[in-house]
Image 1 (cartoon, rainbow, N blue to C red):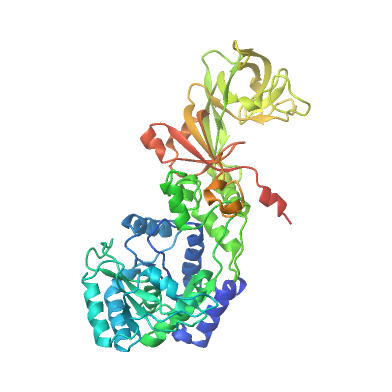
Image 2: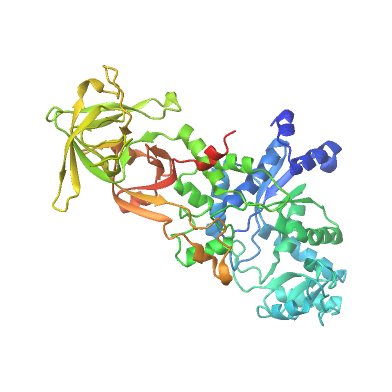
Length: 561
């Protein structure tokens, strides 16, 4: 990015980076990192951090690492690690050869922990986690020193080495640093930096029986990698003094931590712990359920990287927590898809339409525009014959005034094809309309009448012989209230789940070209909404479409200048 564009896009973080670079701090270098924990799938909030860290590196001629902060083998999986890498690439960012893991530094972290013991700044503690919690004190009262705080350096070193090789059961000992049990910052009250976990690590296997805490590994990993600007969300603001303490007492490179507000979005939960519950309790089909705010779920629903990049830029950076309306995300999505998504024809609730004056046995191919917003996309051929299907909602036996769709005696335009006029309709024994009989004007091919008459209604259709039976999944918001965690009487957040967040329609028909559509590639079913082909289409042996978003854009209309 040019210096002119950097000036235009300055926020409080970019301002700080620019000042550091111009002052010669870190010799003018800018080196950031994106450090997710591989204990779940990335979500939209992570995308904001990805765009920030990789974006700043690009804008200021620097570098950005991808580092997996894998310090807890209990919750981490190789599946999550692979998904993280896939998502970052999908968003269009490249860490080149700079893929790192906190586990790459376990040996160095262990040696640094021993250095703290040797300088009498760390000790092995036998208190259980519950006992430590009780001794920690409160925000208005100081904590109590551990009875093991004054162990000798030699005893601590010996115990720590034995912890490393698995000599003690889980939960029986920890390594803590000596800071200040009376500190108003609870993170400085002799925090644990190592705990015993007898579980194999996804990357290091059974090599370790102790693992560093996230707080101990995170800042030091930044230091090892030469990170200049450690960009974190606001929940790490109170951890910064602890990271500073580690760097100062270990006398190592000290990155500059800067905090920003995390992304909060209406109608979703942005906690990996809560998302895991949704998956494990069967409220959703998996981490990639199209209703989830995970990047995998959003991709499956038809979101593009461009939409997420645009959304991240629009929401910007804040120093205080705020909540973004999901309507803004949907607005960004519609704007993107309106420009890029090809158009296709389909009907969700088919009703047969027969053109009685169309030549017997004849069929033809109609030229249909692929995208009116992009003429370079050209046209495609759509089969047309005397037997078609329209959407049942586009016909009414006894319509009210200003009804512009099909009804007895009314004329409408079949999109891209001809004018048709309803002559009669047929019903079954239950009185349900089963077929509409029409005539067509053969001179109106392409949707224009040679005599200049105009019709106000245009409806979509599909050819009866060549259309594809399709299952359509209409996804809506996963929760029924803007803040799902705002519950009454301490109720669980799952009480706010939207029971209508998924509607499955099995009787739809779509034009045959959708069989060849790439999975996940969004398109517009005209007059219905944006959709994409779901990955289940292959295993199910049928065409399955996910609704990406409806056509109506309330946010865009409300925010027009």
